[in-house]
Length: 451
Ligand SMILES: Cc1cc2nc3c(=O)[nH]c(=O)nc-3n(C[C@H](O)[C@H](O)[C@H](O)COP(=O)(O)OP(=O)(O)OC[C@H]3O[C@@H](n4cnc5c(N)ncnc54)[C@H](O)[C@@H]3O)c2cc1C
Image (tube, rainbow, N blue to C red; front, side, top):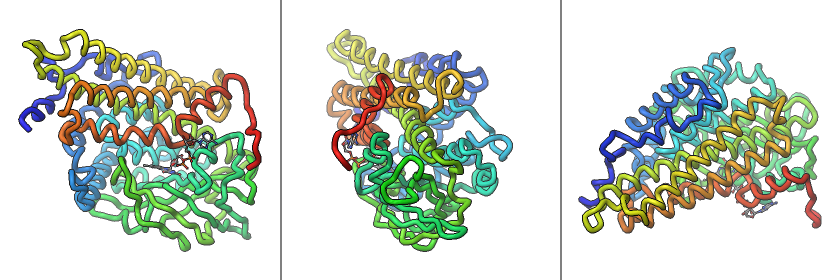
């Protein structure tokens, strides 16, 4: 294992780091301010000091000790909350710092260098805040603000996927026809009945109460008001974590995101919620929020996270290939290997510059369109699919260059390889990305078959 010890020297290039990967070099001043780069720098230092050393513990070590994993995830999440990243995009009028969408993505990128699962966990709160802001629901933001800005950390979850297929829910041509979670109006309440697969973090409310975590803020659930779906009938409904009628499976065992997310089935057995917990308030707004803020901006956040993950892998690989000597010369100084490292960096850099450019466009809807419009969805999909292909190439090349050392648990490369994959598949997946790009380019098309 001595050989492996050599790779735990971040920036071991003799100059104290990789200049091209520093926030001041990599974040384009065309899209952000000096102050925002300062925030990214400060956060990056926090990630290096407070999170990087615990990457194995977040999965409970090699033997997947659930107690160690839960304790570590809750502790580190609480630190992130204390640092202020969970509330980063909460508007100032609700007590948050109201940081820009670009900073949201920088947080995603820097945090994913350490753990893309933890970044996704933070992202769940950003998701919930963003749909409530977009819907103009100041009343609900006020209601949740104490949990978001208080000293104690809370988690949250979005429930979208259904047994009829995640990609079907995310397919605009299917207009939510396959969604079978029904929110029926009943006086001043909605009564929700249905079955979701995979949402996380999910489970009995007490699973999310610990020394470090105050609790679960609840589920933001995509549902339709009547069978058969339709753009006018879909909405987002907030269900408190301890609502009567919620039932969960055991958490799934899975390849990556082992404990950062507890993914379960959720059954909604006639769960009653007050009417005000429907987030969208106007006809058609639910569909706009789901297309634009849940799927669209979710894919963009995925692009930033995949970019951060790829960067961490490249850093590890550059350190390793400096210390691995072949016939008297560091491996990375031989053109065969240098070219591969250069190609890895090139894709990461393009991935970053593109997701930043699209994020900047989100802040100019007057010019580029609203996030639910087809041309913006095409760009979100281009960002996520390019970053996903990059992560696939970078993790594969890093392991190839590092040989068995890359295959070893200690290198962390195998974990990054296990983790990146789902980000390529969720929220509609790589195929939907391609279809959504094509549809942005030359307009919508319908599937020939019936649903
Ligand atoms: C770790 C993890 C965390 C997750 N977190 C959440 C969460 O928090 N909330 C949540 O709701 N879900 C979550 N999911 C579920 C995830 O979003 C879905 O699994 C994903 O959307 C794919 O859906 P599916 O598994 O039903 O696959 P399918 O929909 O069956 O897709 C399988 C393949 O077929 C293609 N395909 C199928 N139908 C179409 C179509 N209509 N158009 C184009 N391509 C199509 C897809 O691109 C894909 O390649 C999570 C999953 C994992 C593993």
